[in-house]
Image (cartoon, rainbow, N blue to C red):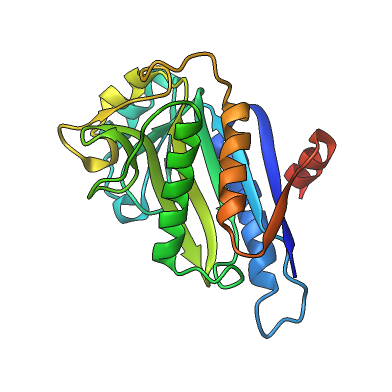
Amino acid sequence: MAQVLRHIHLPGITPYTTAARLQETLVSRFLASKPPSNAPAPPPHIMTAQFAPVYTCGRREIGTVSPDQQDYLRADGRASFVEAMRGGQTTFHGPGQLVAYPIIDLRTHKLTPRDYVCLLEKSLIATCAQYGIKALTTEHTGVWTSPDDKIAAIGVHMRRNVTSHGVGLNVGTDLWWFNRIVACGLEGKRTTSFEREGVAGKSVEEVGDRYVSEIAGRLLGVENVEKVGEEEVAEYLKA
């Protein structure tokens, strides 16, 4: 049966913890429908947002970032630091960056974990192409505009085939924040953005809508996208 991909866009600048709480609520609904439960499975969801400045480390780094390094990353209170359960290493999220978190059941869409990451990458590349940016994949995770310039990071988590976390695509991000870390643990690589690639004035929400459409077009069984209205977004956040 054809499904609708529900797109929840969080307006404005969102605290990471708010998005994380909503993400966990959605994941819990999927898990609650797994056997032995007979509860109906929710439709696929994707959450898009731009976060207040935050550095996050991946699950392999949890407990390894020293208090001094955490203090440095907080930049005198201008950013926060969070340990996340996603894959990958330390990265930055902040204003001007599209964060997109699909919450789907891979089995419903007949995807392996590798297929899923490939789908995220292809959708990012297609979104960049809509703005005249030629992007590619390399031997390193993520999407790049050259072998040395990364425009989008990918870090996902899967629990009983239910996905969480996702991608960060730099639209108008202040790239200074990335200069303070070895982004994703890759020495000698740079971070780029739509603006650095010569595409200015694009909103995160606009780019997010296009990315969600690219995702929907690649998800088996998804017929179209339904963007959740602001009142319903508020209800999601209360859950």
